[in-house]
Length: 282
Image 1 (cartoon, helix red, strand yellow):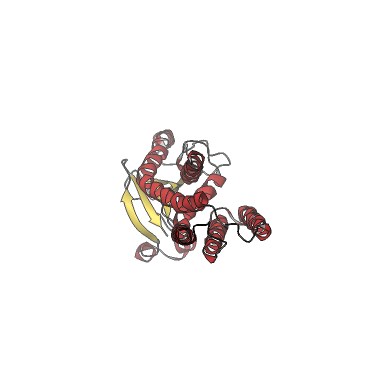
Image 2 (image 1 turned 90 degrees about the vertical axis):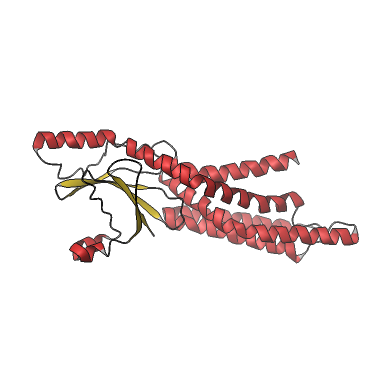
């Protein structure tokens, strides 16, 4: 029993750690962003395992109570395994969204390997062998609940801390930009370079992006999001004239009010630092 409990705790901790990887201190790692997205999807789609596993447990308990012997192979167990295979496939295909087809091919190949090996083991099993063990069914029911609960509970505090760290780490870059302005009477026309030199200090944030904006400028970075289907763009402007736009083509084809209605963000919020805001896009 203790071993099964330890395995459930370890699985939950690993999935939650993958979820939070992009928000941890460190240099940028694109794979961490993809793993986080896959873990987030598991937290949502994995809840499908809960009623399936609960039904299997109830079904077996009823049959065991009626006959006094372990339940034979049944359709309830097959349903659990089909749901588990479906959840695994959805999580694997999520890699396409966050990392492209290379990681997706690897993830789907691993998924197919597990499904194939599981099907072969089940085909060789004796007719009276149960399709699932009780500890496995309990794990399939409790781990998704624990993962989803922790992801939901940690989303707010982790996002605030992580965003604040990237904002604080921009202080030297902002100071150097202001120094340039004092020396040249204007802000830099561009900071496009092979090596950005100023690092946000988060695994999930690649770099700061700079653009002139009127007589001021915007300093921008994309922050990871724990809201599925949502992207978060964080913007600094010394005059509080922050803007963010979804599509580059709109910047070329529209201007003024016509552009404002096409910027595409869902909401905008003040960050916990002067002159910073963050925009949420779908």
